[in-house]
Length: 356
Image 1 (cartoon, one colour):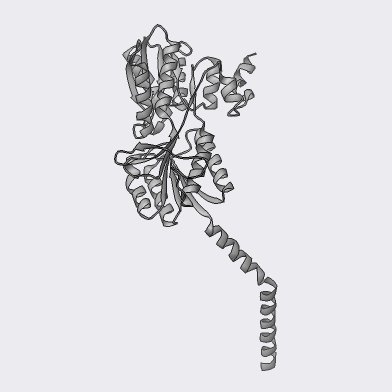
Image 2 (image 1 turned 180 degrees about the vertical axis):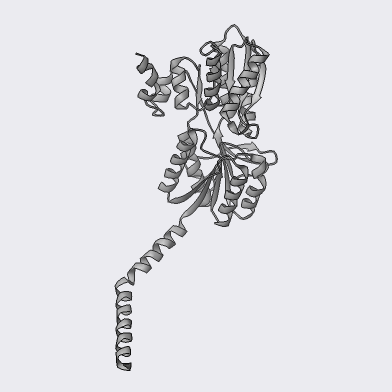
């Protein structure tokens, strides 16, 4: 009996040794692969939500660019909930990310957690929207004052006789909104356009834009134009105008060049949109993120992109990189949007073709 047990034990030991010998190289290779992954530059990318169409494009371009440069990107989406975004940034800090790139829901609410990240030696990039008083390592965005200028100029051109206009702005917690409003106000202040109603849409909720139009029409139905904080808000504005038989009669301007907005422009229910080269913004931000993570000087280094300007965040002058927007109307839709590859001709003119 003892001999039998000894024989079984011996065979078991031999089998274990054989398995170890046959598979010995694999764990080592796996460990090497894991080590390589850990050695890669780690970037945390935090979005407020994907409600706005453009953010999906930003995500895809940023991630693909960063990965092509040898970095790993952890994407988190807060779904428009500030507390969730704070929690996700705390997770990035815990995971010791090299760089955190954030599209904030509420800049004021994220200030302390981003300061904590900075204190832990993590680089912080404010993407498209600034978080004030954090001393971010970079603020990259479209020139938002210029966006406001372009919308104001488009209304002036489309309404040569002047008249009353509404301003339906985005979220009051989005710092970009202030810049857009500033640019828009400067553009129209010396014109014969009069802003008779102003509204803000919390968290960029499009249905609120429709409510604001109804409230504005209660003030006066004598309105010649409406400025919308983005194309998503414009969708509800045009809907309410249609319900009041004013679509196509009241000039609507917005920004983002969403597909539905481009369709409305060729259908003549929206006058213009502002195209923001978001893919350029995304891949440039990714290159900056990788450069920062590698300890490179992004203000005067040898990289292709340099943040040579500064922007005051309320306390600090932070490195600033801005990208110029482009006004898009029916006249230049093909050249800017279609030839530029942002949307296809088939998609933009879909409803026009159906009518024909």
